[in-house]
Amino acid sequence: DAGVTQSPTHLIKTRGQQVTLRCSPISGHKSVSWYQQVLGQGPQFIFQYYEKEERGRGNFPDRFSARQFPNYSSELNVNALLLGDSALYLCASSLSEWNQPQHFGDGTRLSIL
Amino acid sequence: GENVEQHPSTLSVQEGDSAVIKCTYSDSASNYFPWYKQELGKRPQLIIDIRSNVGEKKDQRIAVTLNKTAKHFSLHITETQPEDSAVYFCAAPQMDSNYQLIWGAGTKLIIKP
Image (spheres, rainbow over the protein chains, first blue to last red):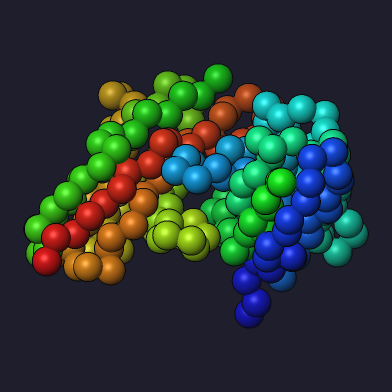
């Protein structure tokens, strides 16, 4: 079975631009969570979606938004990019929304110039 | 909200010896505690998790213990091998409606040959 897949693997943008990152969960998983990981730190929670509804939002500005599609795949959008948005963006899927093992994709490395 | 503290930040052990990493949490209602291993440049991988209705769980050389009274849980790795070198993260759920995992700051485990 395929694991969590994310695209693209790497992305270079400039300040002020917008970016869309994509995630396909493990087959059968209905929950997707997004994390930002800055080098040398643990993952920081951005969003969780379950059955196409937002179930949780971390402490990130409104420039960050996400959605989940009927096939449970998800997109993370970031507008008005700042240098500080440079990070590894990780997607994790789980069977349901609550206290279930989360399995991560390889992430999207976003660099802002 | 939940607060997770992880110690030590760096742990260096001789190959073949045991390693112990400890995390404390603040929310007594927390009931699910995963441990992740992240090698350099790779995704976090779930290595073991424990629920609050058990005190210990083992999987070959890896074990996790949970002390609900003291609100701490620990990762134990026995007979360490070079491939155990990585950063290890603990996490605990925020038990309000936010559904997010709160992560520790990570422990860099170095296995000396």
